[in-house]
Length: 289
Length: 289
Image (cartoon, rainbow over all chains, first blue to last red):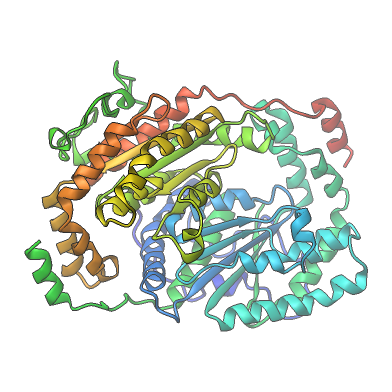
């Protein structure tokens, strides 16, 4: 196991946070590896794994507060967005997979069901927010309602335009309630997406990961990039900022999300819950049992 | 990473399966380590981890079939039962934690809520069974309705006695539907339980894991052992047999459940789903996109 690395002056959180103002995705290099302290792909898996002891400890503190019934117990919500093949699944497998599954509430948002469509778009989202002490993971999220819904003209422009403010208000409410919201845009290049889709078509063991609809969406690439740039510009709030994770290199992407999650948990400065029983009396009872 | 171990003549599945007939728990040593191929605690963590590549591959095949919409897609359900401190949580963290969280549906059954109590005891259980392609994990289960419910006299004896047959019928239905049911009794000794509870009382970082109710249940140890022996005798069906996991040694317990799960997945002989699209046509579409 690698030694705990010295904290550098700049956290990854600071380096990946989207600056205030208008975002132009073409300014952001999907192949970049900002803040990576190691030697590239060679040691990335090991470096990611070396985060596990601290991540486990922090997650257990979070979970303990939730279990102990603390009404102020914190929650964490990681939102993963990105084009097809950007690696939402890979991040869940390799980064979130390092966390005790008992402390994780994972929710993948697909196209809404008939029942979900009868409600406001945030209805199903609200039902899935993490409980006290839990780390929630959203694989896609409310942002699809200003992304695919916009690009595919599923509602009038006046409708999706109002949603930026609605989403900001919703997230602000979560934050006020004690939820740390970590919004990750997995930024993949158009060429890399083509390469990854081609890999799926080249290997019968990966056919199941391929969907002809992926190419239908791919041809709308520019419209999606515009929609993402608007999301990163208009929903990049102080309470719940966006992070851009360069994702052409899987090893960097996985490390970066694990590191971001670790830094955010660390910042919560979590202790351990106090006993809500008389410790000495319980020792006595146990001894006699 | 350790090399894949040669398969021995006897699978762990065969070694841990409860033989037909009346079970006497005092015949079963909670400190035993049947089938463990290594060198005790020293190499257990590494041996458990060395199962991960095969376990991951098998789980992905299971998941792929579920995703591909195969109506015959298999499901797996691991049921974890055992006295307090037997390590249900530890198994989830260390053994199930090796599996991609996207393929796992974890459900912990606590005391039923007011809403749940208005329904038949299997109502909430049925709602939580795994979807096609998924590995379901039950942390406690329908068996609490013939264990704690019996020991604490929460229903008349005539009621819980009927449940053995009901549970057998329910599980047989799951199996007929394509679910592999792996029922694990984590067998811990009375002394080891005392030791583990004492550890929680000795360490302020573990207070949150302690509940004074644990001692209330501990004093009913013999009644629980009788109730468990009945479960292992009366619900040990051909379709869904019981496995006893000696659990005084955590390292053995975690390895054993991971190994059992691997053997059961292996036995499903899972392939990869065929493409439900024209591969060559899609290659062409992708090339032009």
